[in-house]
Length: 355
Image (cartoon, rainbow, N blue to C red; front, side, top):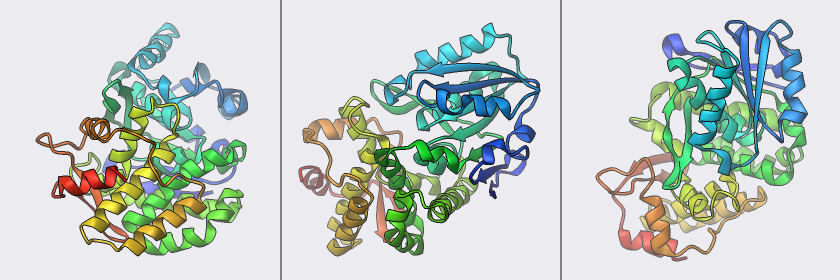
């Protein structure tokens, strides 16, 4: 088991990475505060791993709550159901909430923990590759709204993140590919050596090679931890973690949060961001093709769905980074270096979105 650290002063916390880490006392038992625990999960993950988590906490009073699976369940209404269940069970401010699931459960569990009695102890146990390298780390929590993704939420850090790679054995190739989108993102915005390593090891990761998978998760968590530690609430550098996401969230909104997985939408969004970067002569057309080839090797889409350009732009306007009603985008200054800007040509953006 490897341990990475998110350094936020007295709110710093460990990320435990490795096969079987969810059963390690150092990871789970030592992170629980109080006697009462709510485990929030969904109807897909619960039957697979809930009993294992409960067995790791034999002396605790464990309450469970399970939601239907899917991005469409990420709503304020469901967060209210979670909180009502906690109150009904008599849980108080000394309780711990454990999120056991993918990105949706991590986001919703974190949000529920942040507002229940003004904040209780939170442990994230992500069960998908995407959640292990992204949603569980950094303290972003929230739910979706009819106007866009994650528009209601809070920054709320967990006391621990437990990335048990054994959980990934039940993921299908589509879900593994979706996680790879976020992993590739880290290379594009921050580490070209990692990007090169990914190019050589994509197939090994998809085949669940233990060494390759472990390194990909660990390096991704290292990069995100460094950025979050420097800018917890996205006032500056943390915005680069949204590379491809403004486009991707618009794709998810326009397809009803059902047809495209988050990682798939981000992949197509990253290609659009690369194309706009190339239009601005920041990166070359050859580098755009390299990104497309890598995403294709990872089993990811490189073209957005057929969305009317005006509808696409209107969806992008609900992005949280909009400032003075201007869409801010994360683009590549060069490979391995990203920046946030609103200084781009509207004509170039329209041309990129129009294909």
